[in-house]
Image 1 (cartoon, rainbow over the protein chains, first blue to last red):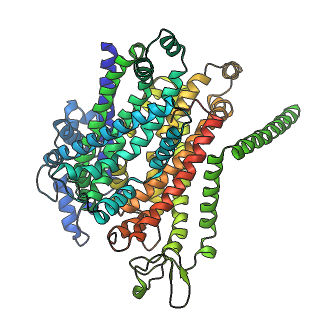
Image 2: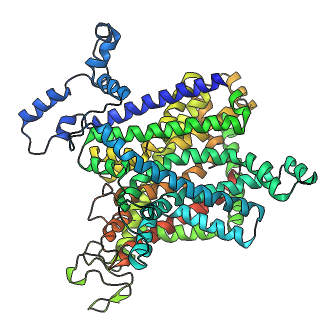
Length: 323
Length: 303
């Protein structure tokens, strides 16, 4: 058990390391970040100065030959561009935002509660609707309810998130004038974005719960539970759901990533003041420290959630830890 | 000589079997109404994308500022019907939708081809070689899964520039994960099977075993995933267009049309509605067909 957790923790750290390399590389994709970051009318002199100030003349990953420049090894952290970036990432320091002239990380942290609130509400709505629908569809297989639920789920999976959002705005804000279309502040502002964001996961979880329950309900231990006279409700929930939950929990964990990513679009449509919208704006202003801080933080949350999901697994299915 | 004749016989057998398989699949398709509906939707959309210049009633980029934001079913002064109305620049929405289908399908199919090839190769190598190679590929897939996909794609496209080629490249290079994971899992079970041990015992080279013996046996799940992934690519492409980093105007794209329509939501609902319906229909068609393909070809596959 402990060995399993230590191994998972080590894997998570490797993933974070990989993410730091990818977000570092983005800026260097064109080969010359200085040209990318300076205004188009900057003189060659300006660009050269900027390159020197930013340290863009230093090697990216390794100063050649490495055996002369890696003694002591921590010179890597000051001599190379990635080394400096890495040292910053470990301290949670991505530098100052170009546009706001404040530390990028604190800007991201300021917006993080709004994104977490939106994502968790969306997931809560999705699970609370999808799991009962999935269970009912499985128990009442081939009934009208089953068919209606699954057609809706299929439609939900086929809709682009932002279009659904726009249609919600059109219907509930523009036509019916029931809910606010933009901004944040009260729980009424949260409803439309949360349902929009959760719709895709809702559809996926409903379909998965149904197929997972159908599989479990055909097992012998369920028949045994029925045979020994347990009530139908207890059979379905205690013996059915607990065993059907494993694939569903996996997907919920993975879908948190989809939701954090989807929040980027949802926040943009509804002008929700979260990290996603901040990052989209940062990309259009070429504010790379802010982009890097946002992407890394969102990925970090995803890694954390999936680590927790793995711990939850060992409770649902103790065999997992011993594989 | 004898080698050649055996090869011919074997290929003959596979085509005969292939034909029977195809007939079985077609029979199943006619029986399954949902999948047939999906296929018909897709054929319709693909046909209109291919024949766009013939089908579109107007030039999709022609702007008529005096005829802007006309409602669906409106007739132009010279008596032509504009079935779905015009947008904020007076362009015919139906014509733009028909041409927009081209971009969606080209990007969807090309990105899937790129991602599928990359993911299958990585999965084959990881599963067959095992050990450190496997560990490396698995951590790479975990890393890709953890990235907030849209932000990564947006950031890369902002650096490289929003051209058709770059968008296909970014979508392809970031979505190989599902193929790699499934192919690797398949290879892990295939590796212990007798025909692989036999090939190894006969001294077959690693590359030959991977491509001749393993690849044909993992193609079924790859085809199922690829079908469903076309839908995801189309949605992602439209999302990029929606956020302003898709294929640039004046080329009509569904996501771009939707983004334009947002500003006129309260006065001209049709401008944002119809592109969304087009995306949804296409994706629905692919999902119906893909779900059915999975049930027929590889029911164990959990997607």
